[in-house]
Length: 410
Image 1 (cartoon, rainbow, N blue to C red):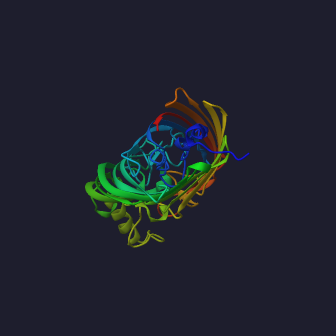
Image 2 (tube, rainbow, N blue to C red):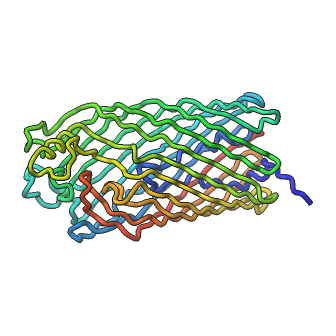
Image 3 (tube, rainbow, N blue to C red):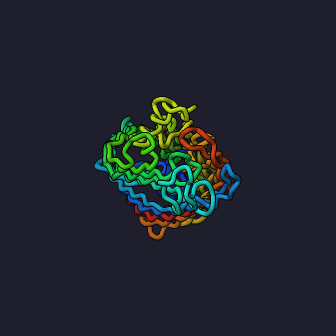
């Protein structure tokens, strides 16, 4: 007997784990910029909370132990979507797409536990740390096409806010020991566009989404004690351009039988195009390059943060409806990382992951989902902007927990 798939009942099998997809991913990637809330049928709303904790330890080039540098963090995602009629749909999404949270401690080359005799003006008793936060709001308008409305094109504007704090401490950073920068919050705009195809009779949905890069022009307040060596100001306030990367997401699902759903996600982000280049930091590196001690430093100076490779992320899942109101799902995933060696402010090279989740329909319209993932983080060598390797991180892991409350009416 041929089964007929009904999305309203089969959708309960989608114990969505996308809220737990991007811990310790390549570059500064966090949320994965998921748009599947907009691809749901009928009127839909969701609120998602994600908590991430990783254990990232290693050794510096002096063979000192480096304790866990990865700070736990959490973030939210919200989405609402409604059909104006059988052709037009609108939606609004909020997420926190990019970020970083790392803090060194203990006695190693990333902590100024003693006065650096080569830089007596650098602060001591302080540690290297970084925090980057972003927020995005996306508006989407979709238009369904074709005789059966199987195709949909969609797009809309994106408003994004970014801010950052970085402190470099310890002899690992050589002349940059004592450097700090605070990048004030800045809001700027980009866009997304995509195309989707659905075939309800087999629960098939496929969507390809492109997000543009977003150029920010913020104010950076820098403190660089070593700048005095070259007769440059030790503190400054100047503009800084930060361009958050473009991305491409592919989302796919299809029914296997009346109670089982297969899912796949693929994401690409060109982190090799990304850089943070504060003017004072770059200016001192240019002066150093022109000096007898600047061998290997390019004349144009150094970026504070940059990456060598692009990111690829793949996740495959299987969801099973166990009862009319209950389903479970499992996923396996892989993230390529953004190169190795990689910045000492985020020294992992991607991950492998395995996740489990469950979704329970509390009522016909309201549901709650919960899930978790375990991450096997890739080994990586940490390097400073001059490309000197200063640390080695191995055998690290992490976990992700998430909860989602959703509403759907068709």
